[in-house]
Image (cartoon, one colour):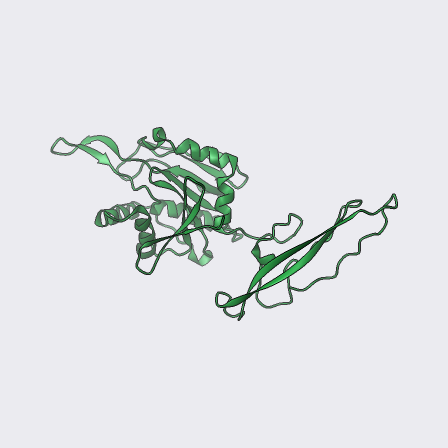
Length: 306
């Protein structure tokens, strides 16, 4: 990082008195040892900068914006600077985005409305869509069928995300040949169609800004969010067909002892061949956990930084 020339502050205001306030901030940045391998080994560099404001004229002394002098495109101030007067917009990580989301009053109200036995024991899904302006709209639903619990998300360029339920087991009202009641057993985890919705949202984000897009599932098994962290080349759609639904159900039947987390992550990787979709669990105490598969194909949980 290099300094750019500072704008001079006037020493006198209209009444002859200048009120200048300066703040010194210290920050650390991680630099790779080789710019051709930014994910390899590296080292920390600690620096400081000064912000000065002349209260009499409201002049702001903006620090270096991270433009540097060429080379690897480092994020300004280690990716965590959130100065509202800085012109550089820094994308939040999925952990930061989900944590910000979970403390949003409107979002919390929708989660609380859905995370209720009276809702999860229904025979059709319930949910809301959220626009990029923060407006929530109830999703339309239809009568449950053998392949669907009747919830549709209409994707538009203004859609930021959606929240929906996956239901508990319930009686279908029909019987088998032996006269035994048939029970519907929904998979209380994201489906291929849910991933398709997120991918379609990313496909419509022509500016490549995928960081705020999300899909959230509320169930008695837990509350989860998926985020798209890939690039345009990772976007794949076409998973909202009956065949993908049937394949997912059959995959569950073949692996009845797997957790829903392992089922989803393995199907996503081995059958759907999808890259760039990450799974997060939001625990009751507010902790956000990233769920991944380790080398033994077992689920690994990593807590997001507090």
